[in-house]
Amino acid sequence: MISRRSLIAAIALGSPVLRLAKATPGTFMPAVTYDIGGKYDKSFNEAAWQGAERFKADSGIAYREFEITSPVQREQALRALCRRGVSIIVAIGFNQSEAVTTVCREFPDAKFTIADAIAKGPNVQSVVMREEEGSYLVGMLAAMASTGGRIGFIGGIDIPLIRRFKAGYRAGALSINPAIETVENMVGDTPTAWSDPTRGAELARAQFGRGVDVVFAAAGASGLGIYQAAKDLGKLAIGVDSNQNGIHPGTMLTSMVKHVDKVVYDSFSTARAGTWQPGVQSLGLAEGGVDWALDDNNRALITSEMEQSVRAATAEIVAGRIRVPDGS
Image 1 (cartoon, rainbow, N blue to C red):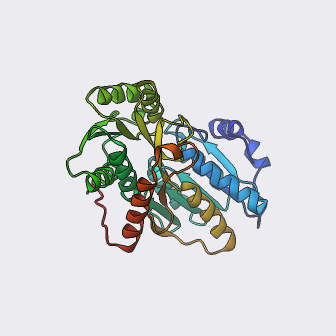
Image 2: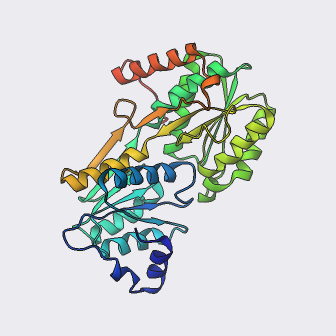
Image 3: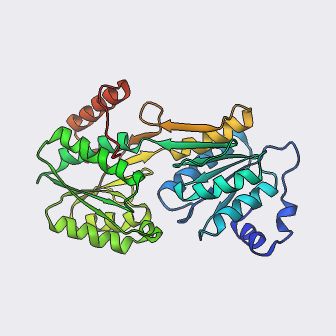
């Protein structure tokens, strides 16, 4: 695959480097653009990378990738990849919505999938997830694990996406303990809120000081500070997006997983097979878009009663008998 450094140089200088890597006509060449934070962010981007790697392993087809480091690169990277003849681009994260909406009009023959947002265009597939459903389940676990009846939520920015996490988490906790209290904070109100683990740790310590004993972080890389604070103070934390149970085994009660790996893998696979379709897809528990994580890292924290309760609630949500609020 083309290196990020080469692509950055080509974007910045109009270099002929990319001409050497231009896709051969008729060759299927997928691509993924990760948003700020890098593909090894232990969160959303890394899950996307895992999906791309799985496609490569299963199909033997290489993919191109770009790790965005500043907002201005979003449109530039998409254009550069389109000019090189890629077959489909999967853009990761809601921050790429405007860039996809703009660039898709310039390249009507290209296919674009955006994960976690809706972008407009006849050649765009927008995949959103029902975060509230997975958050309901981890909210149940938080309430069952809490000994003091007070749990925490720390989001990145107060936007509809994060309100879905918050609403589902609160509803799940209340289904277990109608008297439970949820202490809520946001890291900030600018994009830096997603990458400020120091501020995340400060907020977590403040919540723990108020009697919170379990905190759910939906704050991107800022969550790493939240998890560290939980570990330092002997409290529990809940990860987000990817399975983050392994970051601090024994501290991470569980993780609310969004299967962006599935989005990337399925987009690449359907584009290759000729069955990819534009439009909006909504993935929840029923479609395998969200879930909670149980593995060796948190097995000792999840009792059989807790597991049975969550699995029963999952079946009720899938059947439509539990309707989870989305914060709207």
